[in-house]
Image 1 (cartoon, rainbow, N blue to C red):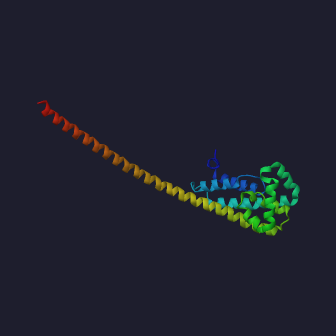
Image 2: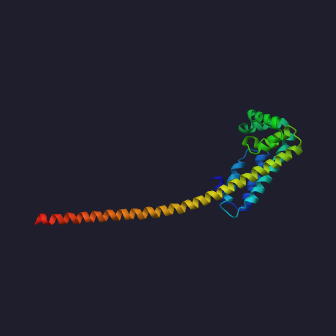
Image 3: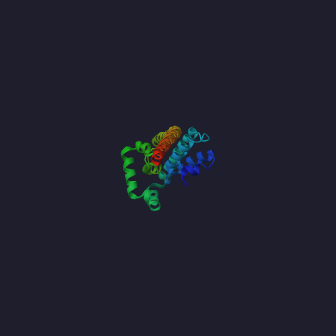
Length: 216
């Protein structure tokens, strides 16, 4: 079962909670498909009036900001031994190469790494913990974290929601066009068949008339 299909089976309040929780857990350093869940929920909100895109965006933003802040606190307390432990548990996400790439980004860009890290899958799970490990001042982290989380979550929700509305409207129009085309094709086919049948009847009658004198 796909994420969107599963979300469609739960109440709207649960959708908000699931989106906020998954994004929050991903933000604090657990490799989960937060973006996939958010996109699926936003697309679902464009198809169901029960799911409010504003509430969905707010819940996603809240999960992103709180999750990153918790990840920052964990990274600040655990330090590099935490990254080493995560590398053993999740080598595909916290391997030495990934950590080194993320660390270079943080050292080069600072607050901007936290901000833009929200839009990059690899850095999204690193932003909070790594900022804590590198002892970035919390006020700097909080500003970048808040702006990045709100713009990413709100922008993704709004973009997917409106794309879903446009797509649904297009498909409806397409269905009417298809129906009209089907009717026209049906009428044309009927006229063609009728014309061929009339021609075949006329040819048969002409053949019969020609055969009568020959018999006489």
